[in-house]
Length: 250
Image (cartoon, rainbow, N blue to C red):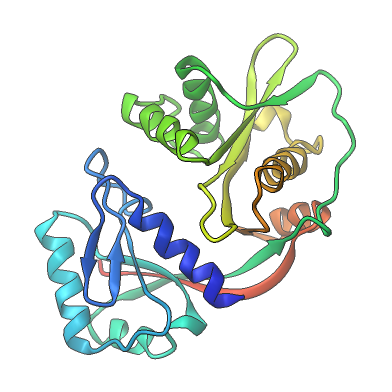
């Protein structure tokens, strides 16, 4: 399963607007943003990696004026972390990823005064992104590039779900990248503060996952940022699987 998840990460980065192939690595480059959480690299699973490959990877990041950073399933490149730390990289985080399949997905109770649906206009996409940014403590304003990125993701088969109150306020949302090999990552599950602790995060997670499976995906995966989100995802039918590493050169 680790290999399938890592292959899905490679495919996701390869679908960025300007991906770079650097030896055994793929850098998911997006010219519209310098964010290291969008412009990062990952190794192809099972490929041999040398210190020279890491040096070339760093040079490619610098040439593109981006921060060298990687995310990957650790078992798919077991010797890579030592090479990266020797080159000065610092571990940001180690996360357990969780999996959900059609037979484990659970449907949460229906929420009163809230509707879940896919944004179909740029106005709705901007509202979803603004709610996510606010929930994560970022700039609540959605840029044109943010909206275009979400529109492009939906057009390629990705999923976006927004939670809207009866008065038209976007309370939160989430999404998933276009499936590759019937595997997709669910991410960006966010709820604005006034609407938390009402079961909304679980409902968004379940609806995003349901839409993936309806479209033909077989495996959905995500990562939990803490114990509370871990419990939310488990209640939606996700189960712990493997380990991922986040590491960057400062």
